[in-house]
Image (cartoon, rainbow, N blue to C red; front, top):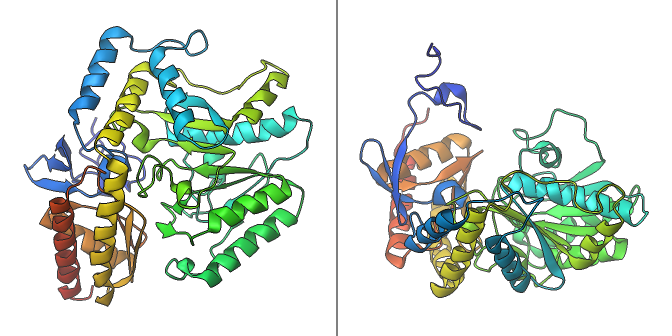
Length: 427
């Protein structure tokens, strides 16, 4: 029997039930555009689910998937490895700096966070130390599984359950606009220093290079370098969540490369397989993995999933790395992102816009209210550009394959959308 609250049996996550009945339905995607059920085409300003880094339907990715489907779909990762996973993890070890050589393949960013926290806490037990406190941002978003959700202080993701380990959440000392100043950098690092000095020794500090769901906040230049020094001074592991930022999104292959540091653990997903198939990774340094020989039960990682490191997904990820190199997508991300940011910053003259910020192909337009953001996003969609808005912030993160002409089109249509929203009478 069909529910009275919805004409669909699909229960979509993160969406109010009352808004699901007559919502947009996307039926086709090609390149950097998508089409809805009514035949309207849109420039995809949000890369599918922020993960279609190579655009939609890239022939080299689909060909890689078909070839692997015909050879080996997957096999039990507890029984055997396979070539696509072995190749991918070797390539990640080459791409990542320092001793980040050891990768466990999973299905989603949330799973990668779950694994990273388990590894970090088990590492200290393996070496006979009592450390289980984790420090992160209050505005962090690291996923929606149990341990991942514990880390967030965002009102719509905060966990209602008691945490199995102590967590300190660091608030931003200033508005997102002011966070790009030297004074805010000093204030922010002082908060992390205080947290590391207070209480029992911390097991790990986990942060995003750019706060994604927490407002698309660009952190001050040099912050990660100073945080790395703090973690070294206090012996805490530094975990960087590159689920959203990794694989070229910020104009570098990894977001932490802007500060030239090496974390102890890094989590990866979204762009790793170009949105074609679910895949994620958690990569740790060799010294961390070596302690698991002393793990008391199985002398290894007690975490994994049936389809973790799926052979077809891994084959696609290898093709993604080839496409990124051959088509210079990291460089394109930096160039197109700079163009978007420079032109969209002109919108700060609008009374609806309080800040425009970005890094690579992550651009945030902060508005004076959630209602203004919704009105601008609606007008942009009507003009033919898909965006995403959360709590008054419009996020623009198109595929890394976006062209200069498409970038110019996004700029023109978003600018027109701000004008349309500004002309609307007050509610």
